[in-house]
Image 1 (tube, rainbow, N blue to C red):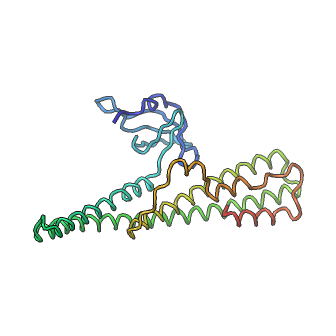
Image 2: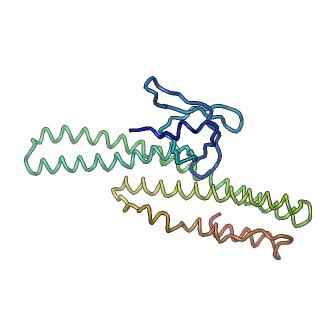
Image 3: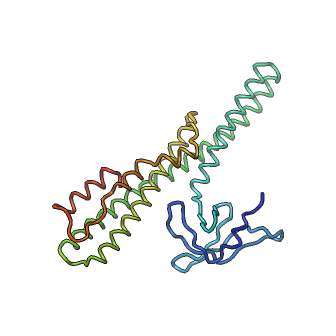
Length: 249
């Protein structure tokens, strides 16, 4: 496969996660003797350096996205598990048509079954990881809601000036948007893997449908009220927090 040439132009460029959070900047590459970039070196916001495999990167123009290891692992399992099932079913078909002997069938079937059990075990481990990450998202949403409430209160009583309030309000809204995207993505990923484990592969969604039909979560974000310029409606904080709870933010 030809490597994306934009990767060589990414020195100094920001690297973000799948939800738009800035992770760091590209500082160098690990190149094999054939001239292919195996990994990138990235400086994080705290000054530490990490090494990321190029397979975990998505490069689109000047945008560089670091893909989640958790989601990549689940994507692999979502491909492998149905494939093993189909092979085992094809094997059974060969037995029914008497194209293979029962002894050969048992031997190969046991092999497929062993691989499938291993994949199911790996899948359960990843589902447990998703549950932990989803719980983290819920806690982060809760803390952001508290941060918003306290911001509104201090602004209402005049302890925070308008410019600082507007800046902080925007920051919290952006954080809420990203963490809600992550939570929804984790939940959808878990459902997809769970359906496959149950033998219920969901129908694929077309790219056009994905672009044209935003999720309810994003619709709620778009409909969220903008901050007032001078004062909040009465009562200011309670009304806003209720809206956040109803929209899942």
